[in-house]
Amino acid sequence: MFSLDFEKWIKFILTVCYMTPVLLRALYYWLKECCEVFIFPNFMNKAHTIGIKKNPFFRDNFAPVHDELTVNHLTCIHGEIPKDINGMYIRNGPNPQFSPLFKLHWFEGDGHLHAIKFDNGKASYLNRYVQTPKFKQEKEEGRSLSLSALSGGATNPILQFLQHYLYDRLYTGLKERISTGVANTNIIMHGKRCLALEEGHLPIQIELPTLKTIGEFSMNGKYHFNMTAHPKIDPITKDLVFFGYNLTFQNPVVRYGVVNEENGDLIHYFELKELPYVTMIHDFEITENYTIIGFFPLILDLDSILQNKSPLTFDSSKKSYFAIFPRFYNENGSTTFTKDNKEIPNKIYWFEADPCYVFHYIHAKEEQDGKVIKLTCCRLDKFDMEMNPFNSTKENSSKPYVYTFNLETNQITEEFLKCKEVSKEGHVMNGELTTLPLGDFPVILNDFVGQPNNRYFYYSESSEECVFYMNNIIKVDLQELTFTKLNVRGNIGEISVIKKENWNVTDNQDDVYIVSFVYHAEQDISTFCIFDGKTMKEEPICQIELPRRVPYGFHGNFLPLGTSDLLVFD
Image (cartoon, rainbow, N blue to C red; front, side, top):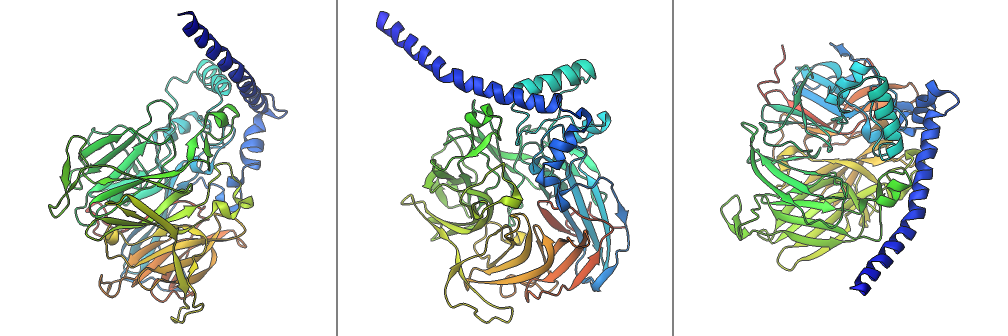
C-alpha cells in the first residue's frame, strides 16, 4: 500500500517538475502577447500595425475589398464570349470585413463571393459577402470580435479573458456568444441548394442568382456539426458524400455522411473514433464504391499552444495514414454492397504512408474489379501554418503524387506522378519521364468524380516568388502520361473547366474552356479570362474587363444554366 502511494507521489512530483517550466514559459508568451495588444504605444492603431502591416496576407492582391457591386454588360478587351457558356461562375475566398483584433491567418477571412453571369454571349459581374452569423454579429458591432485560432490569440487564455470577458461583455455589454464561422473556402451546387463551405462550421445556403445569404444548411435538422469544404457529389447517384472533424484533444472524431440530392436528407451517417492523432483534414476522395480519408501529421500540438504559436504543427516523426471504407459502411454489419449489388467486406482498411501533407486530391478510381484503388493528389513534403508565402520554400509547395492501395494484401505503393512535357502542337519536348511542376488547385470535370474513365486534369503552377502566385496552367494527360503548359499573363488561383457544346466523354474529354480571374500587378487590376483547354493556346479566347480588383481566393465552380430551377436569368 505504502509503495503504491509512494509511486504515485513520485509520478506527481516528476509531473510538476516537468510542467512548471512549461507553464511558466507559456505564461511568459501569453503575457507578452497581451502587452503587445493592450500596452501598445498607439493603442488605437494596434490592429493596423500588428494585424495588417506585419501580415503578408494583407499585401497587394491578398488585401480585401469591402464594397459589393452589381455591374451589367461587361466589356471584352479581347475576343468574344463563347455563346455556349451559359450559367454562373462563382468563386469563394477570404475577405475580412474589418481589421483584425490582433493577428489573422489568410484562412480565417470572411467568405466573399465573386461571380460572372454568362447569358448568350453577354456577361455581368457581382460580388457579395457570405453573411454568416459571425459576419452579421461583427457588422452590428462595427468591429472584429474573434481572435485568430490559427495564428495565435484564441489559444491565449489571458488574452481571451481580457478581450472577450472584461472588454466585450463587461465594458461593451455584448451578450451573444462570439461566432467564428466564415464560409470562405468553396461554393457548390447540390440539387436545389447552392452552398458556401468552410471546414470548421455548417454550410451556408446561398440564393441564386442574387448571391444573397439564406442561412445555415443542417440537412433538414439532422446534422449540427462542421463539414468539409470539399464534399464529393457522385455524378451517377447525385448523392453528396462528406465528412467533418473536430480539433480537440478530448474525444476526437471524424463524422461521415451521405446526403440525398432531391430533399437534402442525411441518408447515411457514422463516426470514426479510433484516429491516429488529432489533425487538420482538408479534403478526401471517393470512388464508385469506396471513400478515402487521409490523416497527415499536421497535428494539434500542446507545446505550440503553450508557446502561443499556431496550434497546428507539422510533425515529420509521425507517419501518414489512410482510412478506406465502403461508402455505406455499417458499423454493425459484416458485409455491404456495391452499386451493382456486389457483396464486399464491410470493414475499414488502414494504410500507413510516409509523412507529408495533402490539401487537395485530384481523382481516385477502382482497378482490378475493386481490389485496388489508385489515388492521385497534390502532395507537400510538409506544411508550416505560420509560413510567410513570400519567403516560402519548395517544401511548402506540392506536386502531383500517386498512391496505390491493394485491399486484398493491405499493401501500399507511393510515388510522384511522372510525365513527358509536350508542346501545344503535340511535340515531345523531353523524351524522359519527369516529375511534374510544383503547383496545386487541381480540377477535373465533375462528370468524372470517382469514375474510372477520367483522362485529364488541370492545375495551377506555383511561382518561385510566392507559393500562392500562380501564372501557368498545367494540363495532364493520364493516358499518354504527358503534360502541357499554358503561360498566363498575370497571376491566377484555382481555375475551373467548362464543357464546350460538342464535348463528349469518349474521344473529346479535353474539349473544354478554362476560366479564371487574373490579377495584373503592374496596373493593380483584375480581368476574367477564358482559355481553350484543348489547344492550350496562351492567347485567351476572351478577356473580360472587370469593374474592380478581385483578391486572391480559394475555390470556385461553374453552375450551368439549368443546373437548378433556381438559376434562372431574367
